Image 1 (cartoon, rainbow, N blue to C red):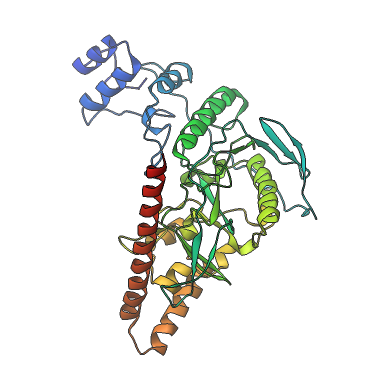
Image 2: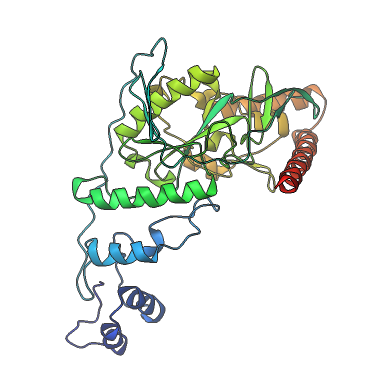
Length: 394
């Protein structure tokens, strides 16, 4: 499995002991625990612990011991004493060019396992499940903690990546790609993570029914010309690409084409404005440190144009203007070394608003943050009431 130094001609005690361990997982654990610091242990192409990466804390808490054994024994790893094959350079998959927008989309076929639409979209229903019903959500003004209205249908889309580590998108890896995709679907169905998943082959799966809320964007903020929305599980639809924040080049052309067709359908069905089709990094916030992008999937390079959408990285960020959230060099690095245009606009507007009230920027941010905490406390209270009512009704 590893190329150990010194040479096997003069094996060390830990080498001899490792060779006696038949189980590859146990051998791996033993080596990582006992190998001296001077010994070079090249990383395997996919380690058992890296099959799913917990970049989103709620994801990948389940064990994959069986799959790990398959990956180690059957997936091309070398045995102990052999050097693994070098990784090929990552393939950057071409992003499709924008296509014509259909005037109208209608359902062509419906079976127990599939929906087919006139724009070519096919939705697999075999993993569809129910969650709690979508609740009526409040709409806030920029300057008030009191709601100015409510809504009960989806008004936007949040695009995610699943944060799973991926097999190479190659013909030889087809079986592994299908296995990983199936395990992923089982997990996010159990967790009610998203409304839709788009796998590496461009297949669209409905996970949580659109009538219900998915657990995809709990602490999140966005705004449009109607007002500000807080905690978007009820107000937005969650669409996830099978992928990882750190491997954006692995998103496939098939996934992008499928996302365009799905976006077209959802926008027409719910009259969703283009500016409300945004990425998780744009809406995610951390209430503990009052910073943006608690989750960083699609902090840059989302293919807005390929989905026939405007570049929404230029949109102002409501979490900054309405509630005083900040951002730091971590987000700057994730967004390619420069802030989004929308961030610069929002920061400037916040400074101008503070100056107009004769307050320092820090004091003004404090006022906005207090408003956010009031709203968050009220939303938590309402959710607790709904949970209690649901438990009582069972």
